[in-house]
Length: 243
Image 1 (spheres, rainbow, N blue to C red):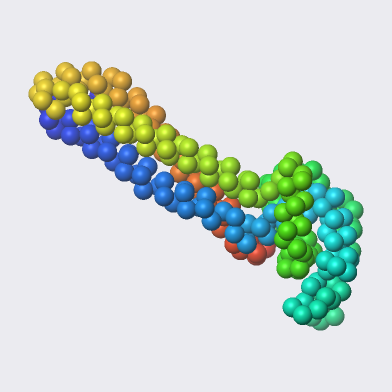
Image 2 (spheres, rainbow, N blue to C red):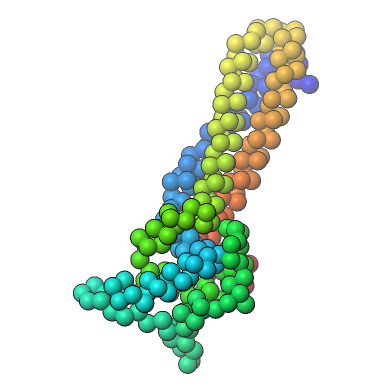
């Protein structure tokens, strides 16, 4: 236990301030991640996750895209949506056939956000999602998610992790501030015998240790949240060569 003298006091003070500064530096990054967590990349992952886990949504996509009033709308005139996508060398992907496939393709009905990793590894699903998301009306997918709040969304998954990380950071920052105020108001700096600092350390050091544990937990949570966001910006993140 640190005790005695001005040098010991300054060591404890420096440790307390350093923890607070680290918390303060990490908090803006977490806030920024929360603010950008609803961009186009996230919406694409929301669309894929609903396709992967909701058979009713897959049927709804087929119904919507075969409706002549909501199909592939061109800039000047309505056009029928072409479900077939040519991939070169005579390869054709029929996206409607993929949507209508049974559990041999769609194995994650009623699943959770983490199932996106396994579902997205199926190349036909990944390609179908990429094609359909460009043409499916965003207002329709939003409306479906709003009317079915139990449906898992990638944005909820990311927001939950990031919010949890921000709560830890805010708690740690306030804890560091309270520790610093407590240390400053004590007579530890003036007491050269070190007894006051020793008494403060008996409670302050365990709290400092807890604050350090909170910091490590926040960094780990934010690491996973940043990873989830980065993956949402890369349509190729589930290619086997990238895993």
